[in-house]
Image (cartoon, rainbow, N blue to C red; front, side, top):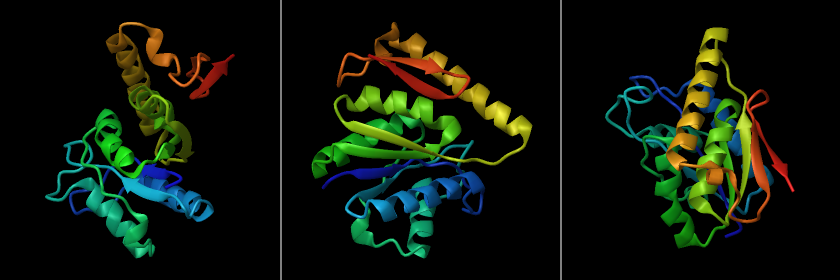
Length: 189
């Protein structure tokens, strides 16, 4: 298998309706899949008071959306039960190893991509990880709130890492610096 497109879960309401931002992630993933039909799709998401309070895991609603968009079951890998980005990375690792996939296209929202890539690179080491961020919608207050959440979460990752070794790629010795103003990584050789 050449690779896997991982769609990180977003949120849904109490009736299982996916948020607009989650649908934007899925639609981006479908566009990427149309350009990489040899890849498989893996979806994540579980339960949490801030993103899914229904009696079904969040990934169930993503799979239903993919089914409506006529994605074949043979193009899907087992879904991943998770409640955070860290769990997305940890809980999907065994599935990727099982299929021998080392190329990942990570799909999430642009505002979340930097932190997601940091976590996945730390967890996956020598895998080839490419991130593609979906646009997101929301009021200015909501967008600022999401950015603050991401900033605090990245600071927490740094604090918990004990040093900046978290930002060094295991694949090579290039240093990765954060440009939080543009929400992107800068590699220095």
